[in-house]
Length: 258
Ligand code: PEP
Image 1 (tube, rainbow, N blue to C red):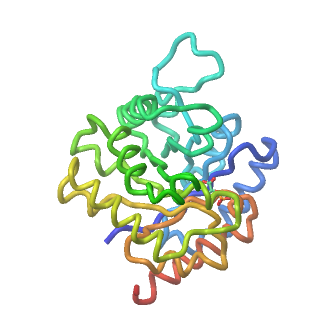
Image 2: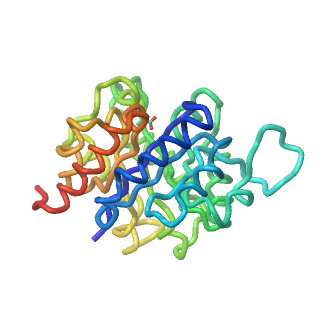
């Protein structure tokens, strides 16, 4: 069985002292759920090291929201997976904000994914269609392109270090989450696509849903068989809400799935 994973993407929020204080609060609040649910928080890069140290010895892991693909060199403003290796656990790539606002291409994401895996980071690859693509009925086509391009050349042995986040762009930060059925159906498609590079290992890869997850809708989403967790933006900034999402995840695990 796949262990659920709740990932909190803090985006560009909090000062270093605020982020540290919040991380310490999560350390206390999430302790009761640590045996059931994997949790990763992804603070801005400037506070990542400090927070990783503050969380040492507890079950919450940390992740970077982005990294380049080179190990080092003249890349002003960039951080590398090599710098994260050994103490940072996860790396998020392909978030729609990176694709849209920073013009990251499928080809660049493929290079980032390889660099992350090479340095033994657990990579969360985000994919998802825009509203325009959704309206045009192009979801399957878009997801297929994004997945195939990003995963090109990934080896079978690396499959277990990979998770996919399905994030319909129209659901991110809008308060309009996808319906559980729609999310589950698209995530089923994603799992099918994972079979081509990874065969039977596809069934071990976690697929998260992202897009306006809240304590109110977490349960109905997580009850779906293909939904192994959530990538949470806005609600991850509020300690009470994030904790309630983790709590709902633990409760779903303890009751039969639909
Ligand atoms: C996100 O940015 O990945 C996200 C899912 O944001 P939100 O939860 O605010 O929709």
